[in-house]
Structure formats: C-alpha cells, structure tokens
Image 1: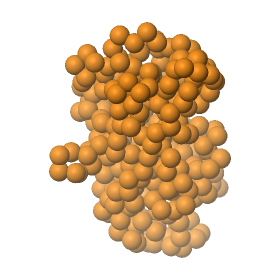
Image 2 (image 1 turned 30 degrees about the horizontal axis):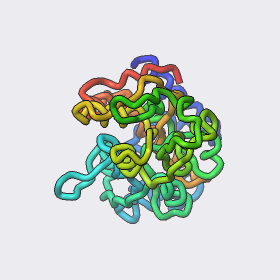
Image 3 (image 1 turned 135 degrees about the vertical axis):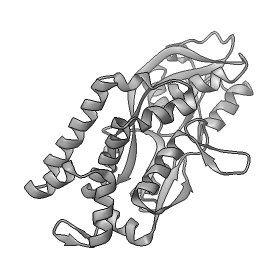
Length: 292
C-alpha cells in the first residue's frame, strides 16, 4: 500500500510539472485539493486566464455533473429508494463535497460514458472505466483510484473456465460494446458469438437465463456478484490484465485534470480510499500495492 501511495504522489507531481511552467507547476504540486478549490472560488482565476476552465465553471455553477454507471453493485447502483450508492458514487460525492458544490448525477453506461464527458454533458465520469491509450485519444484520464482486472463470470458447473474456451461460433458471450471484455474476446476468442448489451446487469441477466455462456467485468464486480449468488455463479479464477480504473474528463483542460489528480492522491494517502473500499468489499484493496 505504501509503495502504491508513493507512486501515486510521484505520478501526480510529474503530471503537474510536465504540463505547466515554473510557478504554476509548483503551486499545483504543493496545494491540497481542498485548498486549491478554496483559492479558485475566492479569486475566480486560474494562472494567467481569469475565470476560465472547468474548475471555475463548476465552482461558479455550484454543481458538478457526474456521469455514473449505476448498474453493478458495489461499484455503482441504486438503493430501494432510488438513491445512488456504491464505491464510484462515494468518490463522486467526496469530490463534490471537497469543491463545496452539489452533485448532479447523470446515468451513463458503457456505450454512453465517453461521449457524455467528451461532449460536455457531464463534467467528469466515475464510471468504472479503464484508462487505456486508445480511449485517451478521446478523453483525458486521471491517475487510478482503483486497480483491478477483468474476469469471466459463468453459471456454476459451466465447462468453460477461460476466455480461450469460448472460441467457437456456437458459444454466446454477453459483452458491452467498447468494453475490455469485448476487446478480450476479439483477441482471444474471435470465433465466439457476441451478444452486445448496455451494461453489466444486462450481461449478467443473459448468463443467468442461459442465453450466454459467460460475461466479463472487472474482478471487483464479478467476485462480489459470485460471492452473493448462493453458489449459482462463478467468477472464474483467471484474471486478465491489471486495469487502472480512472476518472474521465473532456480533453484539453489540464488544470481540471491536475486538480482531480491531487484530489485522488490525497484520498489515497490519507486512508479514505482504503476505508471506502473496505466498506463495500470487507477488506482493504490489495491491488493498490501493485507497482503501476
């Protein structure tokens, strides 16, 4: 955990120093997340450009529009009263509280989350999205606030144990379009018949109804779902990759990216991230010790 914390802080500093000149870089690197917000709110300025940028827009508006994928507890879901709950929701609410603004929730899924933030419909997404170089051509990513991997979920007793076992035209697999699971199937099981769904809950339903042999999602979700299924589902043992789960923002506003990086770094170093993870999974996030 300590190693990961050091890496996160170091990465944040490098990002700040690489993108701004002298004074602005030093200020961004040394200011706390809350302090930066307070300063911006009182002065209404950023560097040499007064009153511009996403951070100032949010502070002046008094709300932050957050894209959340509320279709896979414990990452994101809704309670019996329809209120958003989950790990991503807590991160988003913490950011809103730190900025001193209200959070406006915008529902997104795998198909819509990137376009929602790229178009400006939302200010940021906390939507269980893996930061990849391909996606980074379209939106900007923060440093990771969770490290996970992709696993295959099946019914108990299923003879298919790995993605390679699915490489046949008569085997159906439920995947969200544009997801890591889809990419994994294209690479490792190109003959599989893909059933495209909008989110994990829809993919899970396909498996539960026997319409698909398997589906894919982050291990944090598949492991939890299997554990709560009374033995009906299995999160298969093999984990594919080590995925950085990041917040996503529209391209080009590096002040906003730096601020979010500092916010995430602070909440990892002060222990909030570990406490929040344990709240939902019952244990501390072992994957944060991975030297990403």
